[in-house]
Length: 317
Image (cartoon, rainbow, N blue to C red; front, top):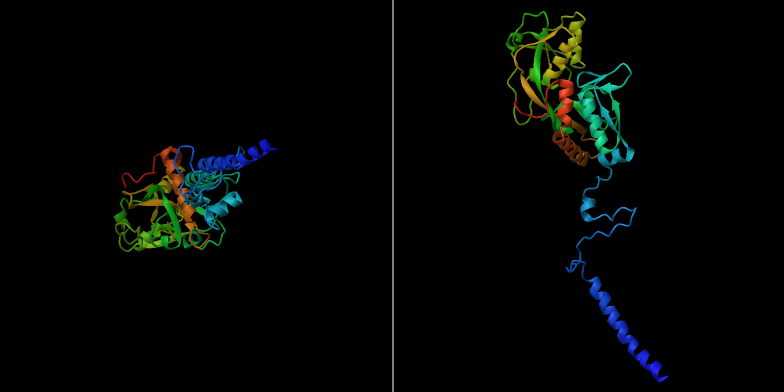
């Protein structure tokens, strides 16, 4: 009995020593530094499970109810495009789309990890904003302008195009100045129309003024102007569009010839509707994707494929 009492008497001392050791181990990390209350820590991940989310990781999560979260949850992003705007975008005989903008939009979707679908709204509806959720973004060669920025959220430019004046192939007009007092065709709601009307504003600079006395003739899309000449119509003397679209028409044998130097150069960006789900983190994510596509040569290769030159930097603007 006396021996039993001695062992019981020593037991509390042993327990106290064990508690002290545990407390010391819990208050020091493996590197010997003392943990501070309130410091975010990440629990080690169990094999096959995701690690516990830290404050840092939470700050990078998509905005709840925002456009990025909506698209990722749906697993698909809907892109607006113009089916009659080669080489940027057009419909093939089998009903599928092709072109520079189609390739860029599809690559953005791939890098977001979602599928892509296409919608074909009018350019006026697109640039007016308030898309009512009918499509999620535009990779449609949209120029960043002060007016559009009121309703549209833009990424950084993904390429730059010169605005090129042209005339019907048999015309004797050889310079932009000779179009003063003449009729010039443009796509509706385009920067080309704004330039002719004297309202084009890129924010950081305003292009030189158009020749005086030009009468604007608008068509639903730029390409329709060249198609009118192809059909034998002479409703206008000039056509203003991107150099890429003008050259595409020439390459296809349409009766078009470019005249003079480009009248201005424009920055073209991916666009999102400010009236829809918050697009701010989607703009950030797509900017990161575009930066990666610049860095790894993807954008340059796409430009070379469709335009025969690299138009993805502002060099020479």
